[in-house]
Length: 182
Image (cartoon, rainbow, N blue to C red; front, side):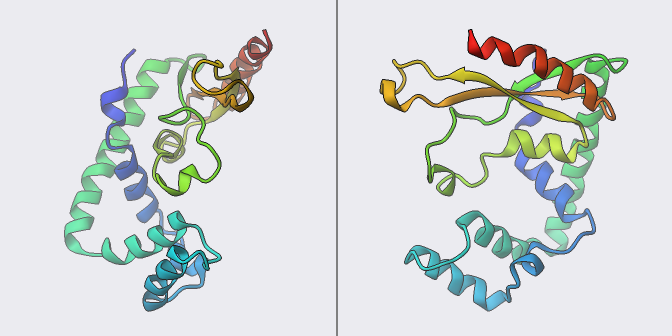
């Protein structure tokens, strides 16, 4: 079943749901003030920051998204998130079904690579805000033809089950995982 089009705005759905969740802003966790985060960005560029680029950018973005225009767009993506959850529930059925999907849009990233594409977590992020249980399954290593033999990268997928059906995603993962050793 094709769901790719419905995941096209995964980042926006994740961001909207996280923004309206009612928790503390990320800024509080970073113990940051507005002016200091721009300075922290400069520190990061110079290799002197104790924070990651995604953390700094998320804190800066929070400041720019707290306005009426962004709240209106956020409402649209929240509604889209709820529709996607209903669609997935319809596809999964009575509780014993699952969806197998990628965990990441690319092959496992090399060390440091996520710093250059900090929002490539969209597949795991959107499933998280859909409140659906997910189990990551290792499926082996990339083939030597895609990377040097000594630099094979891990492959995997995530098993998404219905709300409250954690045991189903875990059971499917347990059945698939031994295949990675064959």
